Length: 191
Length: 144
Image (cartoon, rainbow over all chains, first blue to last red; front, top):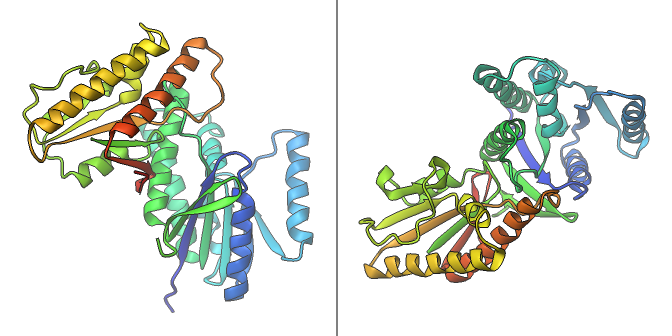
């Protein structure tokens, strides 16, 4: 049976409360649909402190009132779609980490073809998960409101991230900008 | 005058092109292809005209003048641009400026000056515009 899947895009600045809002949103949807909560973890433990931090987050999600199933995946998100059914709610936090992983884990030269492939991987990966699952909530960061000039790496990173965000907002059923813990509706929900 | 702002790579240009049904490159003057700040645009024979990359023109000003002088020149431009707009009925000037003001305080004095001047200049242009939109990944929010 065909099912209707939905995409929710959430951004905000550092410590704006965007991740908490995304988790609340996921739990709210799970309450309505009876769906299973999944956390798609994108972080790569590069040192002991990072590893401990990831493990703490994982324990928090597993021991809380709401049980989350954690899936770890740092690149090529499209590869995990088989884990999901139309009952699933997936929280992906966050696109900037994903972009970092795709750009830096492979030590490839940043030519036009590679950058285009990175963008495609992220977009098609998220789209594939969305098509397979019930709801996908994607979290990202607001980092494009400062000068990107003078550093080609930063400029290229910003361009890719901006293009990915534009695509996600275009495809999203709902989009939110979180400011100081308050979600502002940018798309959907009666706007 | 319609001022368009928002972060880098947020789809400002595409939004303006679509909103104003821009057909020709002759309607467009961009700082991104090294056009200098146009003090006077009276010779432009168009109904809809777009100035793009205000933040780069402001940066160029800060390389030569102090903050007060930059703002003075900027406001002269704004007056000249408004005069162009009023000269013919149905004329519409659109100015696009990327928001560069929300990062960490820059280490270098010249970048702090650029950021400050850009913030003030955007306040000035917003005050003199009849309409202001912020573009967020292709979604517009009319704030004036």
